[in-house]
Length: 323
Image 1 (cartoon, helix red, strand yellow):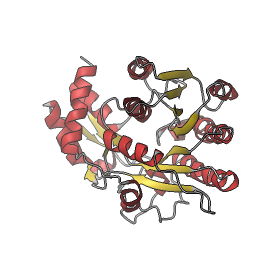
Image 2 (cartoon, one colour):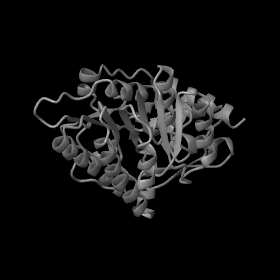
Image 3 (cartoon, rainbow, N blue to C red):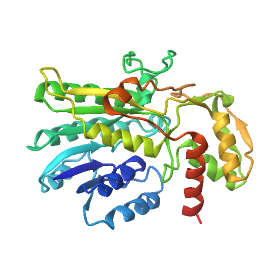
């Protein structure tokens, strides 16, 4: 038996793959190793995974048929954790076609691949808190309307949820979509706030703080996210007449002011930041907050890591990695 993880060399995909290997699973990892950010970081993550004989790596783009020709050579796949995507709200304004290819075409190809798997028990896929758009009702609930995305990235993620629902309905395919809220931690992406802030502070460069610091985020530590993903994977929706499809929020449910998080980061780094306050960027939102009631009830999800613990752990990794 095996689990396919797409985006295996990415931030969340790496941690999920490692957790699956740690519990004795055979993992088939897929990643295009694109250059959206420094591929050396992806290679470093991948090196840790490929040292395990239970891990097989396929360097392929999920939006191409070749990827699935290679995947078809591996049998016994019972689960798929689909995390590969073109990330980033702001970059979607600059390069929309990258999002159409990776997030829409790639998602449909994964759905078609899963249709061919005779032993498939569950497909878990990544959505995003961005689907809530400019929602002013807090915390964000899975019962809220999500039909007004304010970025192309958000629109593609919401489209993925709808595509998955239709496949679940048509082909009785168990699926769970997970809306991630501001994931951070060791091995994170360089384009994300904490990583870019740490780099600038240590280099003596100013950090750019948007909406003049009036931002609140539901920062969620990577270990909590991984625990939620594995809990979802192990609990496929029942085939009880309706579409076996569901969606959950994966957040910390403890929103933090951005300026407060920067203070924790400064303390962990032992150095103050020079701040340049900027206006809000297009496609961004002022505040996110996750209602995780259903996630806790159905998946036994329990986020454990406050920023006072998670941020110093990120900094410790960052300093070691860049040493």
